[in-house]
Length: 567
Image (cartoon, rainbow, N blue to C red; front, side, top):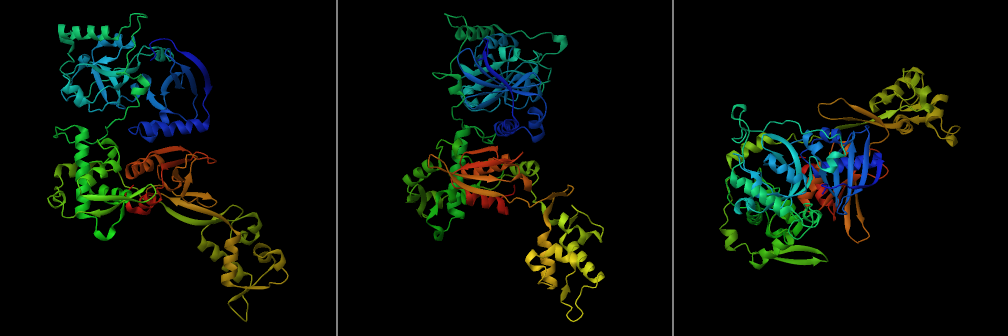
């Protein structure tokens, strides 16, 4: 894509809101990056520019530049890291290895052909068609190119490592790299000893004649007679179209299973479906919303260490899968209200249900899962506090407090009781009443009451005093120092909105105040709801993000936020 010079349309400093949006986009695109790493990649205060350009083939590309180096580029709303970024985060993408002789062809614009791959002892990384991958050279794990997989790993092996493997988007030494400081790849040792990485005594690696022939074929297949420039197409599609191809990847596969990842996901889907019907769904629950069946029953039947994702199965959609189950006469599905399907009947005596045996959990998978489980979310302790305003300073100064002092409710009550007793304001005839002196009158009475109200009961006095104080609160997260802020803590705001297309979306705000990561919440909801989610800056709020989920997902949010899911 950047084999030839590009034309720059604009180069501007990034806005603060765009910087926050980019951080959210990077977190969503590359979940392997931690919060600190995202902050390093997209810094908060350092120079950071957005460059809009046109590649030599006319593709509109947005490049993000930090410290003079291009670190990310965006094409067709997809984010891609540059080699400068991959040198800092070499494990960001699955990495394939090729020979140094191949690099020159990749820089010229060729795609990476499968005969040029070097297969490590541990085997090729597991990817699916359309997955973004890094390409490194033998002996150095620092990536020198990025590309889109033209086929899955299983398909690569089935083909005998023949054909086009990757549509290359960007390389070391191309014009995008040249727009930076033109540094060379760092030396990053391979993760494991590769028999092809020879020691100093054995000298350099020599490619065998068959491999050289394959390299020559890579060159010939990438050349165009008219311009001499190597421009490869992804089948009949352009690179930008190829990068959008749906990918059935992402499953945590069973390494002992010879089936493809898609076949494994299909089997997992069938297993969760049958187990949910046999063990969880009761006849009294029918009719049952299909979304509830998925979220409350099928997901609960997914074994430890596995992740159920219908989009990565051959069915792609829940409705299509349930139609298949209906054709097998296991269930009956009807649209009881417009656009909303429900399971209205189940054949509990169907052979597939009666013969289904619940698999025993694997001890190995249980051990792995227990060892890798992240620390569960613990909600913060939130305490209401009160702040002394200027209008009530005289009432609190005797106890050593001044304007802006933060007090707990019990402290306020003790100060008021002490003030009343010290100034002999307790009514001698009725101990439940307090006489109001000029200071109390000014602090707690309305203007029209100051000449008519002379005494107040204790509870009324204390209530009025608390109401006149300014609100504040204290938030304490487990293992952290308390955080005190003035004002009222904003509750988590859930809004059901309707867009111009007449589609409903659920918007969630103020998650950060409760220690919830919006990107993590979005990922959980995407899996739970089987709906698209986005994380964007919240309008009118500084340094705050909002999560938007397609459809009405209020019940899923209540399931998540009320403690039914261990965040």
